[in-house]
Image (cartoon, rainbow, N blue to C red; front, side, top):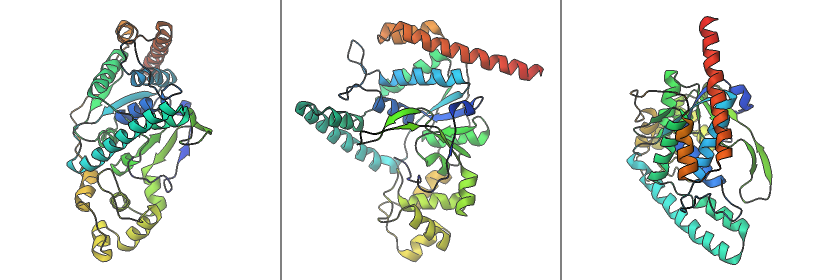
Length: 341
């Protein structure tokens, strides 16, 4: 879920074409969960191969990434490492939610309620180590760069942006801003027509760019104070203070200036040490020991994995390969023109 800052963060809607030539450090786990949640049959069943292995994540990763590269966007996928100890509560809560949703899914199927079945199936999404390994192998075959974070993927993505190895972080959550990413792009992996949760309504989803400096300027706070707001509202590492949303958190921080003073002067209670949560964002577990390496796609490797191993349509996969090859070729040509220009 991440920190719920949506109501106060200024967003600039853009078209994907406007991101041409940009390198975006995409939160891989966030994107894969999106693919697993959205790419499903009418009754909520995920895509599967002939051996009943789930392939929704591979389908979304391959076709969406091919589209991005054809446009001229350079994705770098950043994978989570070891989560902070304070995240254990959130992880356990998510397990409980998935288990409840799985039971509700079976019940809805039995009753023939396909709308409810699909809704519950999306809530029951589960990521496995095999899925992560498959995704990384597919990216290798596609020639797409990926980075293994030592801790939170969003923190590492923010680090790539800070070092200039990416133009922006890409995630549905706002945590990248708290981790210090200068720019955040939402809806990179899921643009297009999308059904609103719990409603029979479809909306057009477009990329949105958020600028950390503009956010801080508009709110008249520092990044440290933004993090303090997040801790007061609740993060993946703490529940926050009951009744405190973005507006109240902003008011408290403007009045008291720091998280420590808010706690001492209001008596706010937390289930964990809030200063330790603050430290996760301000001193994240990241590394500078990584290589962002783009390569040419391996068409045979892609076909072997998707078509031979997982029963994908060869014609559709070839179409994706053509997009990849076109995008890589155009980017290489542009690099040559810049070099000799």
